[in-house]
Image (cartoon, rainbow, N blue to C red):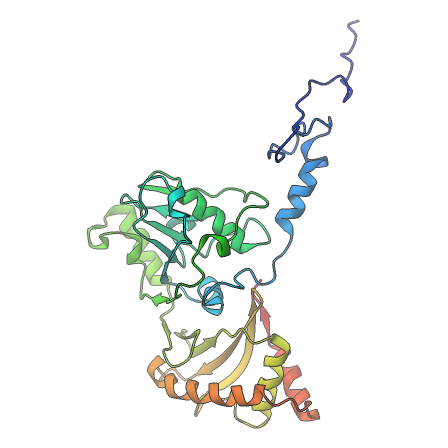
Amino acid sequence: MAKKAAKKSPQNRPSTAVTSGEIPVVGAREDCPCGSGRRYKACHGREAAHAVQELVHRPFEGLPGEADWVALRELVPSATVPLTLAKGIADEATGPVPSVTLATVLPLAWPALRRPDGSILLGLQTQSASGDLSRDLADALELALTTEPGSPVPARRTVPGGRRLQELLDLEAEFVPVVHTGFEFWLEDAETATGDVAASLEQANAAAIPTEKLSSVPSAYWCAAPDKNHLRWAMTVPEEQLLNALAKLTAAEQSSLGADTRLVGSFRAHGVTVPVWDLPQSMTAADCEAPAAEFAERLAATLRDEAPLTAEQRRVRGHLVSRQVTLN
């Protein structure tokens, strides 16, 4: 009977030791490149997995327009924002980069797209591969810089320890979202679209909820749902402080935006709180401008009030918290 081949001990295995630099990422069941003789998933893969899974509570903190980043990621169907790369980042690209544009979503949920002219579309509403959305988006942007023009950027596992958006973008540049009624911005000439491309564009446009950004206050978005309209207003005020102020205003009957409107709760997303108002279907985005500006003044004054909550205000606060929805 033939003898079974002796299982190689770590000492007898061919050496693949990495003596300097970072440990490369390999398959989970492959030998770890560090030379330990253990599988990658049981060795340095553990560190990589921990780095990927570590949750960053406010991934957009430090970026201009943090609240708008959150709104565009979670609430707005179709919008774009011109982005400005930090000094020297464009030099890393394959060829010239005429422009970089953030888009709420791209066809087939691509992370990014390099147009034939070298310009880049970066998708915001993509699946997060790690616990740090800023790092995931930065990874897609870096990949787009080296992708051949005229090609989409495929999804991939984010490299642990990579750069974040805060390192790739100019932090002094303005962040000015442009809300669209559809997704024609996907194509350089949407009017000539035919076949599957035209069908995909038509389907996406039909599913988009009409949305408009208010101009009187920052990071507030009106939308027309099937049964009623809503105002969703992303705010970077610390959550506990904001909820206390909203409770005080609601208890004093000062939290509405006019007749037949009501503050109904809030979303929690990426470290930002998004209060939500129900509006009558007859109330347009333009109708919200003046009431929103007046509410902003009341809210600012209430935030300065450090008096503890009364029993009634605590009851109202509890009701608001019970209706809060966490999006991520």
